[in-house]
Amino acid sequence: MTEKQHLLFNERQQMDGLVLLNNINDVTISCAFFDPQYRGVLDHLSYGNEGARQKGRAALPQMDENTIIKFIGEIDRVLKPSGHLFLWLDKYHLCSGGADRWLSDTDLQIVDMIVWDKGKIGMGYRTRRKSEYLLVLQKKPIKAKAVWTDHGIPDVWPEKVTKAHPHSKPIELQARLIKAVTKEGDIVLDPAAGGFSVLEACKLAKRDFLGCDITYKK
Image 1 (cartoon, rainbow, N blue to C red):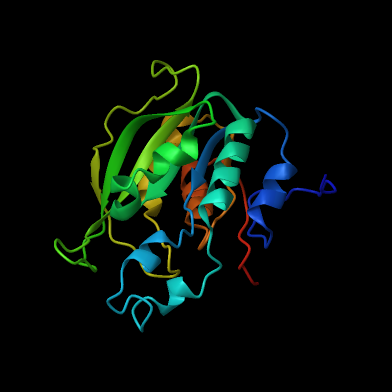
Image 2 (tube, rainbow, N blue to C red):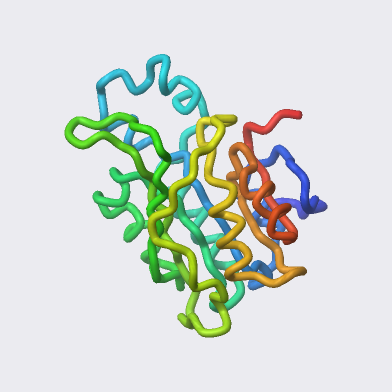
């Protein structure tokens, strides 16, 4: 068992996300985000994706499938009943059934999906990538009434971001989702925070953030 560490809220901190999760008690988190640094698409594609355009992403520590499963299992453990996990996926992992394998031993169920229109064209053998996908997962028991309070969020969300990190994500969308599924005083978790966009979203939503990234440096 890893020695318990003091947790810092509403701050950026460098830590292995699995160590952070080990320090969180069961069923204490209302909402979590997870953006895996999966290697699958970089291995699958071979048309210069580790060149100048993707060198930032390729240089990050990669998560194999077993590591992703460990993260999701721990998130499942710490989530409160009916709590939500927002899981970022690209088209490759969405179509290859990655999420089904990752969730097989959890109490998490896919209840919705949001398409993030990034507003710019990326790679692709056939169609060119313009979107990423956010799976909305809920821990059992599955319910919507009084748990999801904002019914005006569209399932296609256009938002351009400033590329401050290889995994930059839409802050306004994440803030809207946080408000929809949490109350003031609830904790929002991101154990692989990347550029800490969820922290910025928590500031907008006036919620408490708990998260880290293994690569973060002050």
